[in-house]
Image (cartoon, rainbow, N blue to C red; front, top):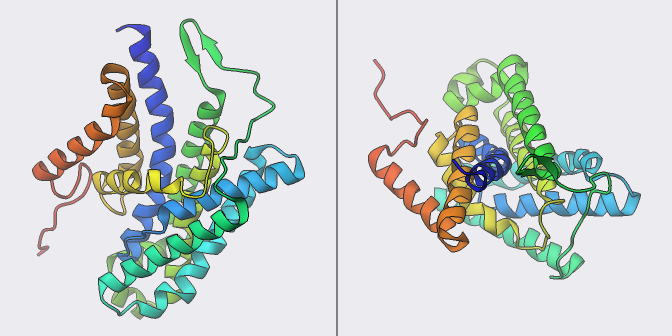
Length: 292
């Protein structure tokens, strides 16, 4: 295995972690409320701009500003669910899809009006350059992003499986009527779940801010990729989303190395279609079976 191949594999792994965190938010929202959130990419971009504004205004590291982005996105997600989506919870599915699509356009056009379509860049002054390990070059921004992804994923796992609100969220995802009979407030639980999903998305966007130039519609680039990862991982599957994100990142990077960048997305989506033909529930999803 030559060093360039290994370099591409490493880059794909690091970026795949960020993809996974973004897809985790989408997967969580669908797993609890069965809502396909088309505002996901736009919310990711809001997280990027939140970090950009706080970091440049206060002169602090983007990784400290990330906390502000996480709080902002949790609040945004809570508000969207509580005041918008919950109002049409009994409406046909296509109404919910159109509502989240409308939210996406409002967020994108709001960012466009405030920040203009010009690209914004944010550098991390603490990093002097790439980390060299022999012939291997590691981007410190990507390395920090991957470490943060692992930490956030572990925290989300603890919240979902070790806390009362996490148990309430999982109960709602499995059986809303049963959860209601146990005294769980469905409306509040849904809003918190949507907020946590938005928080994951916001953090993923924040981690990409020092890596990419940002513009108001950047989130659209990641929207479909997040759907692919969430579906492959099994909607609502925490670790499935993480592993699928790594797989997509690696496949994307290795395809770019072997065949050129223009083939990367084609390969990812072609592989996605083939996998669904073989296993419609995704790589880590459970098949719908009648339980006895």
